[in-house]
Length: 229
Image (tube, rainbow, N blue to C red; front, side, top):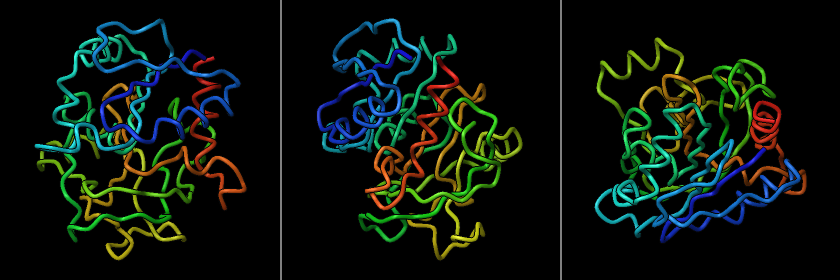
């Protein structure tokens, strides 16, 4: 599996993603600077977390205008897999590659802790190593993770199975008390219409090893390795 990891000014979770990808796939990804206009031949493009451009204007808004996004958009439209984590998710929504927007957390505070997610579907390239409805534990670390969309868009993504993960209780129940940011319908991650682009706020790359207290993020990368090999 050939992977490109895109770096923006303010990216700070790239090392975590590179370690996860290298550990699971056995091959180091290629690093691409955001000012580049070309990408190498790749099976997967990853936009890591961080604070691109210091989150000025809106989170991800300035990064979404970087030159490399033209090529990422073209590759995504051609069917190449794209994964955006946290700030990467924000960039993908700002670039129009994913529906909805990420706003400030409902309590206006930065949240950093382990949370539980419900896997909405296990038939995509990103989730085939999970089970439908499986509850996993993944850390979050964000200030602007409140997912929102207009009613028509929400109805469409719900109706077409574009919701990837939802915040839930350890038992898998949806409950506002465990929603860390106020996201509508507890949405923690979404796909594009073709399910080859995924954005999610939690950080699966930080739960890869049992020594991290949990390895529930590892199957996401294992799914990609198997799907894209």
